[in-house]
Length: 362
Image 1: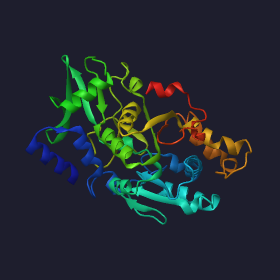
Image 2: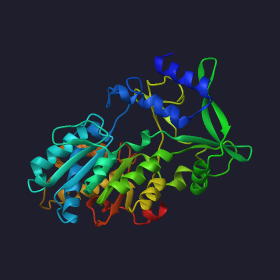
Image 3: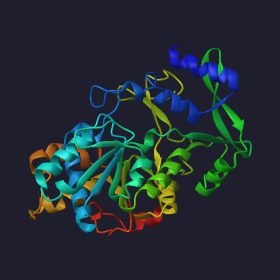
Image 4: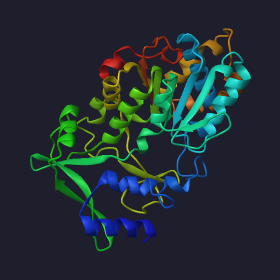
């Protein structure tokens, strides 16, 4: 048993069963002991693989989309790019390098903020509240952030919804189903229309909802781009998905026991994009596009691939990376992009191949 497991067990023995989101929060984010606090390796030699791991092309394509957003908003100065979930800052460096080298007219207007992360050259570390005070026009984006937000876990047993919590037995973490009367959790279950099937177990991400409402309030004008793996609600809570999406990963292998090896494995759940869309709407955002990464990145690259003039991300010279990012059997179908806007035109290159009806499915 490691030190983090000992700490959590003492808390449970003192206070009783722990809601899973509290357990997940400590397992991932406890300073010096949590999984993310120890700066896990990303890529082939780590526990998971991201679009950033493929190389700089992903950041260059996003940067080209941000450049178009600047044009559509009327070239505001300053134009803010705010990123949350920056990890080691590699994606920020890729975006900034492209903007500086390829768009000399865009670069002087650019302000880059890393939310709750490290400061980098040409990028400031800010909180959401600090960003809000800037009344930013621009884009707020995240890549594989929301899937790491701690989730509540619920299960339908004996004609009622119960919350799955973490208990201790024989010095091991086990699941226990607790009756919960919390109004917010019950309301969230009802608005998602989760099927009342005996034994049906799934996740509710209240923290992601609250975060999106805060993001929506922080942006004065512009776009919010959320890239992650997940589903709209109708698919997330489909009758056949009886076990939910909660899982753990270590060395690129899925681990079914999310209560084991605390602080030594990643814990994640898919994103309910419909819940994010509703939360953004409450903060004044309009959902203008929802599509897989394949079609999102192909839309951004279309002008370059067709030979049209304008700054280039370098797709032609990085065909293998582009195929990895967009091929359905690689990352193209695994990830989705939700694009929301506030007082901003919807005609983005990245939405060129989006299905209009996909918005209504949210």
